[in-house]
Length: 117
Image 1 (spheres, rainbow, N blue to C red):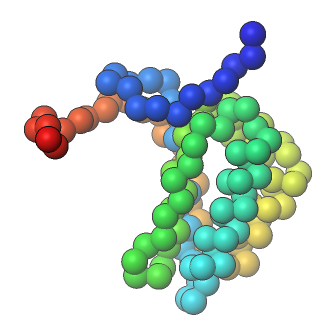
Image 2: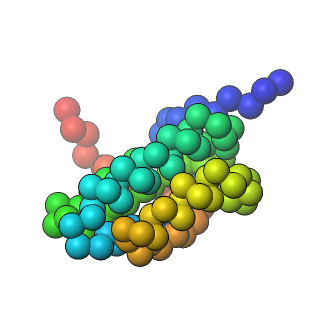
């Protein structure tokens, strides 16, 4: 049986792992940094089974880009970085930014107590 990841929210914590990239763009380079990480994420989404979804955001002050990416397992990070094409794409961020890369495992999920209806 083939594993088919399904992106959805659950009422209790699931063993989802998040990769969080905070990309501090060099002055005037936010759009370029966004395009580079967008290319990196799309490359992963098209080729890596452990990829679930990504949320790419730009700060309103023009200084940072954030990639919050859900993956199946922390082991997927090693898989991504073992791909030389991925590594080259990811390294291209160095020309336009300085970035932080962290891996998180979901430990709690807090939902609103008041219904939006």
